[in-house]
Length: 196
Image (tube, rainbow, N blue to C red; front, side, top):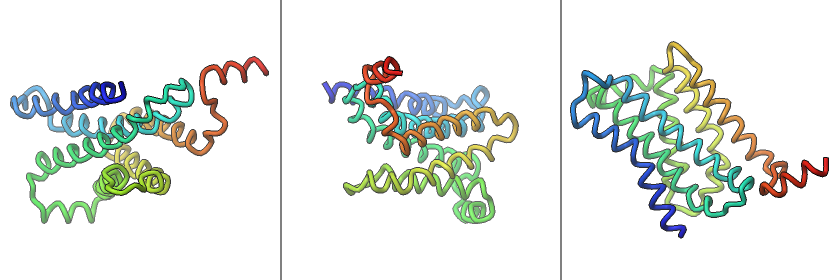
């Protein structure tokens, strides 16, 4: 059962990548802008970070332990979409000009935060060792912070979306710090409310 759920979730998770690939390969430059491709890939990296953080609260509230098998996968997809986002930026904005890229990253806070977030995600989730939990506890907050700073600065007009993501991330990170206060299941939540 676990394997079936993992396969289904993995197939659903690659749909945004398939869409992105289709738009690029079918050369829909007149319909899909370069800025949209960049934003789309970046938002999916953030979405999978949200999914990663949301699994433990969802397990505690629903008691559905099968979700635990999906947490590592959500991390891999977060890192993977961050890599795709970086590749789209390198191809569209800089045309793979490596010397120019190095100079831009050194001088530009937005790109520095983006590069730091990418490296942090790779360290967090593409980890060949068994120390994922220890790495996550130490690096997760700074990685989320630099990704949100990057998102905030690249959004030059309406900053509603960065604000929403910041609120969601703060809520989920707050849960990690105070998980003992969160009921382990819906029945426990109901019993607590009835006791009050």
